[in-house]
Image 1 (cartoon, one colour):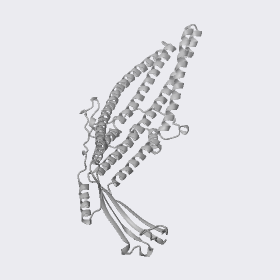
Image 2 (image 1 turned 30 degrees about the vertical axis):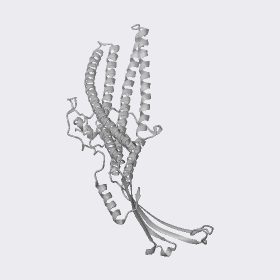
Image 3 (image 1 turned 180 degrees about the vertical axis):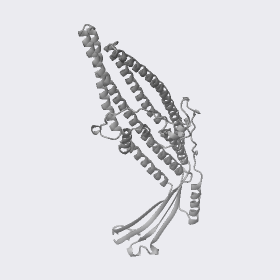
Image 4 (image 1 turned 120 degrees about the horizontal axis):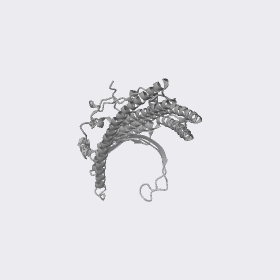
Length: 477
């Protein structure tokens, strides 16, 4: 319904609109969702830290003190298409926030028009039967108009609130992409270095097995062995060679994966063999509640709840009337020279008030859908928190098991080395035989290879832990 208003009534409507715009928006005010959190981690072997909401979220991978890894992570920050796409989505969401806010502000348009027209002499413009002669004339217009869709019930304010939450969510999503990218690069890199170490260990083992094969063949020639001994050792050598070829193939695939992750072309990418890191850094865990501040995916889920809450207000505002104020001012003249004279001035002001009387339940259903979406987002937030807790717990328990396995393997390796030393002394003293010496040396090589494998698993699990903690590591040294 549109009403032409007296200036006094128009002023009254404007004042009402301003008061309405200052009123509290309809719909629920946002309340952060709650999630059940334990007071501490179940693994008592880790010490608690202070809350890490202000902890640096910078290059955590530098704690491994590996320049090659640092270079890969830096390249990914610059060249990763996935990260660039996530950052572009952040800019898109920020722009959409501005779009949402503009809906609650007046829109001002201005224009100028010039035309020349000729009227028809065969049309009655006045009384019937009295034709008007044809005329040719100019028409000049200059004017500006204003229209303001007032936000009486706060629907626009809730839309802005939702857009801001969406922008915050996109920023958290970008941080999640950055965290996952860095973790995936670190995991792929340590897998590559573990393969390098395994290739080196297996090559040394193959060399030893080939020496044992030669010795076995000589023993057969001297009548001290059988053809079965030679066949058995030859089979072992062949199997090790196949394993070595397989490891080298896996290394090539892992190198190509690293190239893609760091934003580089695989054919031009090469990483020379290197050593596996000796130590694994220990993070300050904090308490489980710190994950709400550390993990960007949890922050994203929480912002999704805020967005869904605001959408309830947007849907609810549709139940109430909309008030729009409009006005225009300008000038109109047939002569350009008289366009800015007072008699040429024209103006108009007005207001319109519209409300939905019947919609078949559409608005109520929209509100119900928005409330259901909010409930779903709360559930998803809680699921994200539970998943984060499970990831940290799993990584902590795996680290405890791996630490014990490394200690036991180091004990086994020390025992094998003592045995090799004893056999070597007996052999040097003339009391031992070469097969025993080679067998003891082979046992050492196998234990060394197993220890390298466990060290690689610990490094990979440490990356899993830093990812589970949201990237907030502090160097304890």
